[in-house]
Image (cartoon, rainbow, N blue to C red; front, side):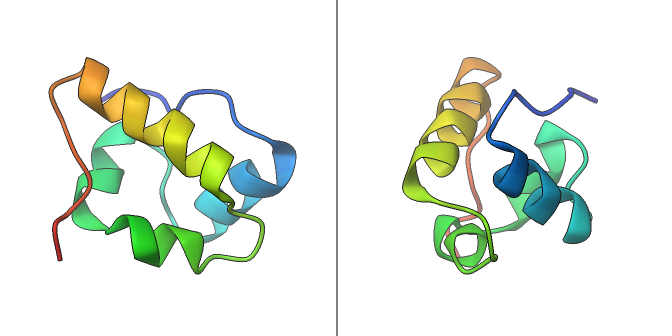
Length: 62
């Protein structure tokens, strides 16, 4: 399991509150679902997308 990359504090809190504590957890959600979380913005999603791609992973296609 891979740790999440560094994001803003609000984005990190949003991820933790939603139970996403590892990069692999994000393969089960869509970008739209993440953007709907309070505190999550396009920049944080971009950082997460890049980290996923670096590990050969991607967001759920929904």
